[in-house]
Image (cartoon, rainbow over all chains, first blue to last red; front, side, top):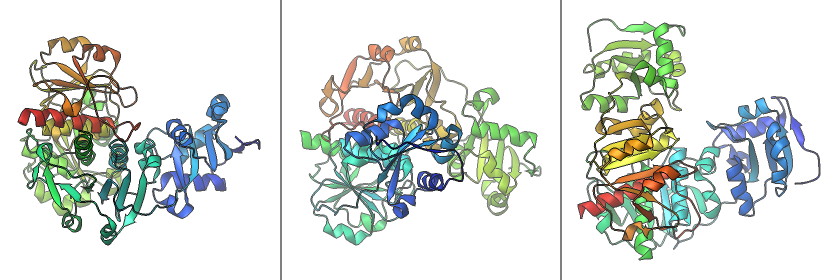
Amino acid sequence: MTDTAPQHIHSRDNALLKDLRRLAQDSHAYRKQGRIWLEGDHLCRAALQRGLQPSHAVFQASYFGTAGHQWADAAGKVVTIEDGLFATVSALESPGRMAFVLPLPPQPALQPDAPTVILDGLQDAGNVGAILRSAGAFGFPQVLAMKGTAALWSPKVLRAGMGAHFGLRLVEGLEPQRLDGLQVPLLATSSHQGDYLHRAALPWPCAWVLGHEGQGVGAVLSARATQFVRIVQPGGEESLNVAAAAAICLHASAAAHAR
Amino acid sequence: MTDTAPQHIHSRDNALLKDLRRLAQDSHAYRKQGRIWLEGDHLCRAALQRGLQPSHAVFQASYFGTAGHQWADAAGKVVTIEDGLFATVSALESPGRMAFVLPLPPQPALQPDAPTVILDGLQDAGNVGAILRSAGAFGFPQVLAMKGTAALWSPKVLRAGMGAHFGLRLVEGLEPQRLDGLQVPLLATSSHQGDYLHRAALPWPCAWVLGHEGQGVGAVLSARATQFVRIVQPGGEESLNVAAAAAICLHASAAAHAR
């Protein structure tokens, strides 16, 4: 870390603390501030391993006292926050003891032929983060979030993504016509049409479309799908969690491609 | 609903309100109170459809005013809570407008030969709920939660389970030796041993063992596993969310069995 002394914050009205609190608690604040809030030592280490460097490394004061030396590789301004105050910054159920502030990565261009996951209005941060992890694991390097989907770089999606963000090409806020630029077929699940996934011939590369937790894939994107598949459900009427369905579909593509 | 007039609560110190708040906010309170808190109209309807009846039907006052008549099928005491107070009861990020209080179902006996999911120390309510949904969908009617796993009937797991609880045989708080009573082989995922899942011969019925979010399946249950499988991950080093891995494994069993 830099040699300048850490800035210690002990007032809840400190201006930087207020900015950080907004960044940590408001899932859209990263767009205005142009920077992201990465909370928890696991995530921060994942960022460093990818060669990313924070503009600010923010620590709970007591944690910095005992473990600050472990973070000597981190660039940026060191900020320590009075222990009781740190929890007032975090929006997580289990607040981390530290966080990085990183510049928001510039939005990349859409890559026409990349294996892709399309998020059509998903709302739950845990689901979105889990799907980013599955996309990374199963060889889908591009994720496109349609307008109305949960903000991808929000602290909660970052937390649930466990570092997957940094290995993916993430494009968000898309209108449907932007998908005209894609050259891969769009696949979606259905409750009533198409072959069963485990028997279907799956194209590669492809784009899987995943829909809103309650309403599923919207009519506009359904009309663009070139193939529907059904997921066999011998247990009957239960609906699947969307991140569970995503994992099954992405894994099926990866397994078919790996054969 | 019964003909007796609703009980209206407008004081935050009301004794019943305090009990309900504890039930809604403390994930272990159901064990002491012997009843569960089912929040949200979707979940409550799912319970009614299964023939379950609440001891209390609890409404935000304004919602009861406009939609109370839709709940004429629900038995039990009707309780209406001042709008502002209702949110102080809920522990959910998006509080429902109503909830049922239901008797905690008695813990069933372990069924030796049932397709089974074993939860070995999972902590996240969203993950546990998603796995219960997958278990229901893929024909695994029995779920065994080892001691140390998140409380299955907590309000958050109930919410994430979306009604799956009511179709499953749920046994919790198990010590490892209780698994001696199981007659089905135990399967687990591994990062380094076993066939790839998509090529593996899977026994049926079986029990899938799913581990803690950070540490995976513990040594005690690993030693009891008779088969390990790997999940192909062409994307490389990313780890999967445990509910995503569970969905992939349970679906693979269902697909192999359905062939």
